[in-house]
Length: 325
Image (cartoon, rainbow, N blue to C red):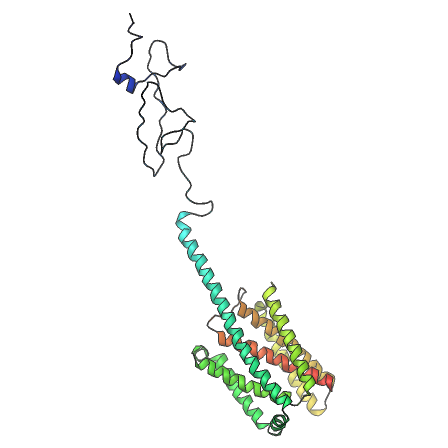
């Protein structure tokens, strides 16, 4: 006959107060057991279904698997949603920043292509005029015989240059900006052709070759270097003023007596100063420096580079002309 202690517990007691099998903390006389460790669902997840235990004393122990949505005791209940360093609230801002940066880079590249395309057309017109004025003898004799056309083209060059530099509206309004730039290019091309007609063909070709090498070297240097020429605007302004003063003094001296070495010295200083201006304006065009040109100012960018290159050519032409003579 079985004693009361060894008899199986009622169904309600088995469900609510089950006995642990082989539990050393369980007394031999049926003392109540401590409740099993609780398992809380993770935040933001649905709790798993309640477990059904067919036999008494079967519970998931610590370190074993649990029902879905439950974490073993001692384990964190939160799951990281994003990688370290990127908060969920800032993901949209980061996407906007990257897209804006990509659009800015694309706009800058399109701006550079447009400026150099316009500059190529300008230089093609200018050096074509120079070649005609140098090789075709009737044209060369005509421009030498009638210098008044040169001074008329100089007036047009100066007026259009002031309009394009000082007035933002004509410089940005299409197609008038291209019309003004075309007039400016033709006027300066005629002036370059007239000046070149006074020199030998060998000197003109030598000046063209040296100018091309200098411009390519300066452009590559500006794209590769970390030196910021845009922060040297004040020094370049002083250099331009000194060049103007030296030019006035040289013109006065040479009007009384021609001094070849003084003329070559002035031409060399002018070529160096305008090479620095070319580097300055190229970095303004590229961007990613202290100063940069707005993508809307493609006419200004092409105009500044074109003027620098033409002046470099004219100064080198004076040096090569003096050497060939």
